Length: 459
Image (tube, rainbow, N blue to C red; front, side):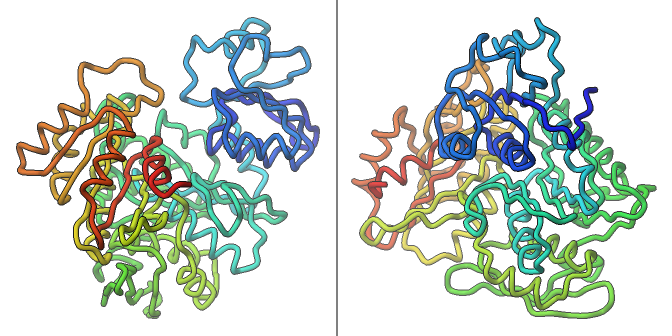
């Protein structure tokens, strides 16, 4: 594998530079004197920002974008083998690294590299921990999988030994990382276009835990089934989180305020207790905050600093984000694209003031929709009213013979009130006719479904 000498900046070209993680890495390297170029299929706020900071960003991926002055090419797991730039780089034998390999090498430059993993909750937990690191004046470098308002984007370039990043299991990418401290929030079936089954996914997380050195630490959700299969004989200390005294860090006295934000008492391994107030909604964020607080405690942060930071933290964009109001109709956007995430978001919405709840869901990838069809139907049938958009293909071309119409039938079989439209404009017209005062509308999914809410609000 090609090894970067970070003391000798070179020209690095990113294929897919507009991705949330790729853009963050490119921005960090720009700050360290590297020459950065890259391409993407469409313009975005991230590509515009990179261009303003000195990167040469090209819209459209072509053979000619690989020029003779490029020293290294970085690509994402989503880049297909027939990509013209990938082919051009291979033809002239340019050194290449995956995004994960690059990130792994960058982590080696820090004394306290922290990686947040799990099937769900990575971005929110990373946002919470980011706020704690900032409040503690550690001047951290942050690479977040969403837009965090307090740093004005998805990346913050610090000048200390603290580095925080999300660690995604897809294509085993997090196994290329070099974390000292790790978090595992949950382990469930997902990305079944890559993993064979849940056992394969669990093995991947086990290997992630094995990356942590003896002088590091692992924080893990103690309620994961057969936990010992993931943690037995790992080199570092293991700290569990949960909702009972069976775990090292646990929550009691959980209540919700008038808009669904939780308060609770955290108990630590030293027998100390502290009151916690969250600025984000839902029981799932109790778990996320427990993980963030546990890691902060392990890193010896003062509890008062951590607790104050969490109370102010409203999370990253697209995580139960209140987009605005259309008359008396509240429009919310959420990134949920897995059945467990959908269930968590709907559970949180129950505690948010509303008359009727409308959910516009855009399934993400054909493979995930087919593999988890029954689970999606179970979760969505709990909503009062569901409107389905077409499946967002993302990296896939094969429809696998399914559509959102198949999911609609499954939801209706379960007694759910479900509608399916092929275009966003049809969905918007339907919502304007049917939503009433006091209702809450949630646009939900990992694709571009957020555009519906923004269109209704005139943004």
